[in-house]
Length: 288
Length: 172
Image (cartoon, rainbow over all chains, first blue to last red; front, side):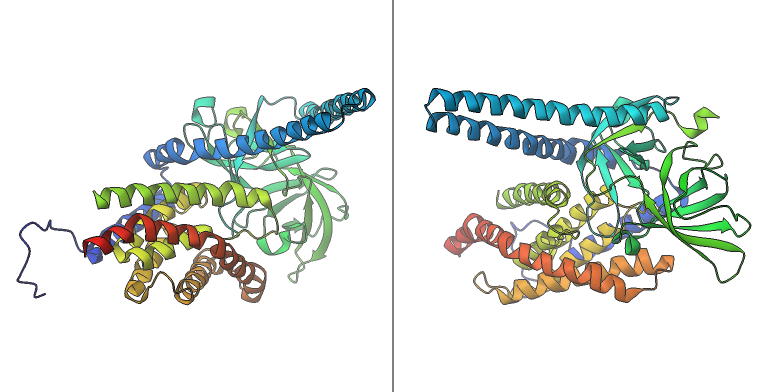
């Protein structure tokens, strides 16, 4: 059809080429804004709060519900199958035992949290549930189910099980994004607990497969530091509160410049299975 | 009417795939690697519905990824948008029953996506060990994505064949 012959009822559509250019332009402007000026994008965060986050919450809650339903159905089936009174009794006892085991498990995890709580008792904390894992294989970020409505702010420290998990980097109404310390772009200013020597712990995608992250810039003069020493967040860090456990030194080596020492740190948190975290609701800037 | 239906179904698919990508797959943890199922959606939309649809679906997926994953806003938007748009050029080659072209296109799209991510977000921060990333991240992700595509492609195929194509076939 020649371009001159146009059906009268056909609506004018902006050609895809122009859409591509317009949207690319928008993206470049967005990149410049966030990269150069570091301005958070509130409206887009709100879009995510409304569309995706409720679904993610739903999926993770449904997952847990389904699991408990499945357990229930299993138990009902066994009861129907075995009408014998004794067997029933056994089942009841098993059921009871299950609950007790669950209680015991809960008790253990609560005890652990309490211990952690004791260690960092100075800071006010709140629990949160992880509702979404990382979106790909390149970065270690995750989403938790509390946001600005619950008082979350960018920069708050996140803990789990044995120590530091990361910090909040983006906040929506009912969600926050956490950048974990094992992420390739993460750097944490730390110190050795026993000697107070400062070092930088940086996340690394390539070494995390073997279960450790890198540390660097430990002064060569710090002779007393040994493999196995505890690493905690340092008091000179501008986002992390001091004294939070990060991990242990698992390997160290003098750099080729003979001025500094670098090596590996085994994080105290098992990053494979994080489902609940504690958020310290005090910012470093507020503490000082 | 037809376009409104298309827009609604595409939006629902984007949200469904994104929730799957961020909740189901990271929690299944079969391997350390998770498949990139959003690229399946973007690529399929591109060559099933044309460059225009691919462009918008890619842009929407990229925006969601940008909000939920990385600091520099707009990187994934631009990347996924381009992938959707370029897949649209193969719209004319596409037949519903042919499986070779979707497989090749999804694989290529994922490879392109991985390499751009590596180049701009890792190489630029002086992570020069490209061999490690290819063997340990990119290759497993591409293979896993292709495997998942075998399951997800029929879903997109059914939507395309029964919700849209049937009507256009009758009208033409």
